[in-house]
Length: 152
Image (cartoon, rainbow, N blue to C red; front, side):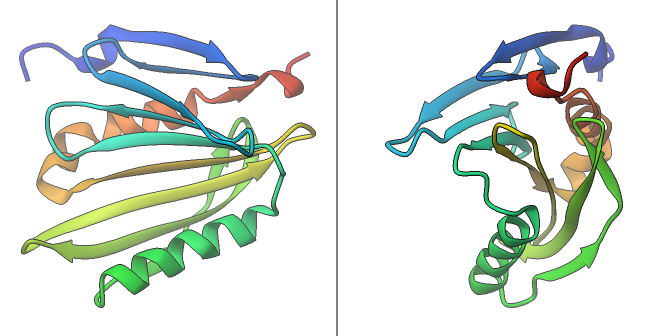
């Protein structure tokens, strides 16, 4: 990498959340009929990072286990492990999922917390060979997430 991508982080702030992301990556924002918001940030490869703002505030374990079930339905070798993480400065319900796709090993990180206004789900994913370069960026993005309802 020619320059550290972490040096190009800019801030996104909307929908009651804010986070930092690389300004050289593409940000896409999609709303749904039930007032949920999906914001996805991606670079040139297969790695991506997303935050889902779930307005009906489902319990984080339900959100994560639903995602794990989707991975295990799609990829027969998917293996989920418990991980300890913080999201929006709160202990998160979290799982890491490893699976193969097109003969490449992939990792997905799932983390969820519930605030007084909504439930957040952060998902980042990538092929392991790309994660060697981008894992620290994806983790920095996740570490930067804050919910406005929790701010002093």
